[in-house]
Image 1: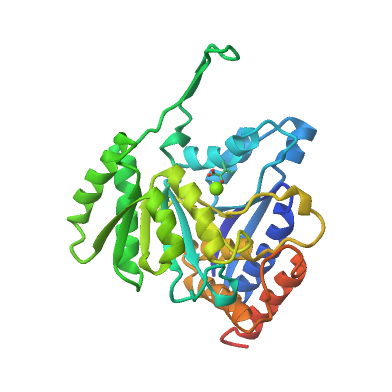
Image 2 (image 1 turned 90 degrees about the vertical axis):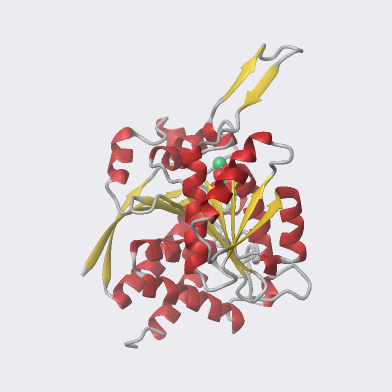
Length: 356
Ligand code: IPM
Ligand code: MG
């Protein structure tokens, strides 16, 4: 029986609650589809930091490196300095594990979930490939004359040939694999951010290796407009880190809200990190009101990455069916209880299993 070692970090706010439901679902999938998940839980997050001043100790990080995947609920807490815990946990894993792809599928399961008029599941079905280690996230920033009237602040947008090329190639491979328009759209702002000319050039070079894949281009501002006006135009889109961060929140709304959007931080062939896109929503923590759907779908993405494709698809199909049959009414806060949704998905997964 296949076995996988998983590190689980529930994190802050609603993170631990939605993670618990996602873990119930992946465990049920493991049972039904015949594989094993050996989970190690870690307490890291803001609460742990406030108690111990520990963010992500080296020993635990080394352990995570030995796992097949890491699952993260959510982190962030308004009591801590901006970015401290995000950099210490999420960014640390993204950079030090070299998770160069942030894979963010935008898939509408039921027309009722979509805030756009006259758009249905066939119109909203795309994947954003967000480059995940460079751009304004590289950490190269500085202040001069801090606190003075003539203070200067800079942050460098960094693009390397290596970093751009591997993200672009991933997008082309994905477009080939997917059964849609066989199209990759490059989203950038090369008309204003001149350094992004490297994206224009590398995209063209890589495209030459994929004559079967069509190419499109949109500037980020226009891409935001198209995402709302004509989401059906997108199949796979590839974009630098910062634009990818922003447009995937827009995409999350188009597919039904932050309660539904999942992501994978991936280095193909290596330990990778899976998380819902939403944050820790501290005000909803501990009330059993946050939807775990995004967390559950992040679990499905994790299983897909581990090679358990049938189980991954089954989870996605169950979620889709629960929406279309209206048993799941939505992902808004309090529409369903957190544990109620976890149980619903788990029960349905068992009920629809091939041997059931
Ligand atoms: C995301 C988040 C992170 C990011 C934050 C928490 C640093 O918004 O994963 O989209 O900006 O990448
Ligand atoms: Mg974000």
